[in-house]
Length: 173
Image (cartoon, rainbow, N blue to C red; front, side, top):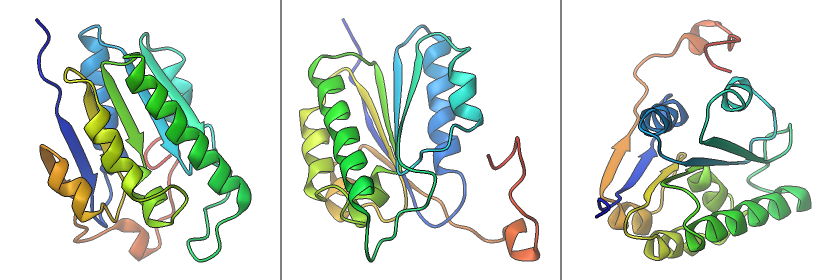
């Protein structure tokens, strides 16, 4: 008998949402679970992407460009990539291809209207009972929050970037 999977939301303006989801991913693969991470609005092949090539049962799919999406005027390619990522998420759930599905920056993709905001709530409702589903990104909708089993809101009290420390290879990316 499989355990019931939960829905986790990591949101808020603080640092650590993706990091927290990747911690859950490592915990899951260490127990032999299949993990799929779909990264909305992220096209750069960063450290976690390269690490996933060395970790069995961990697949990371990039769905973004190297530039940050403009929330006021998203490009056609940003919208197409986000819709493609949403479709991959739907198919992954429908085919039960992952024990853990992480939709990284999905909340922001919905907030930027790259995907229909209601689509994340629809994914939560369509999730197989045993699948663990994690959604990250600022601006999680009230509906997503209400459907989640666990919500963590990251709040920044202090960040080195505000004191002139640039993002560092191996730490922030």
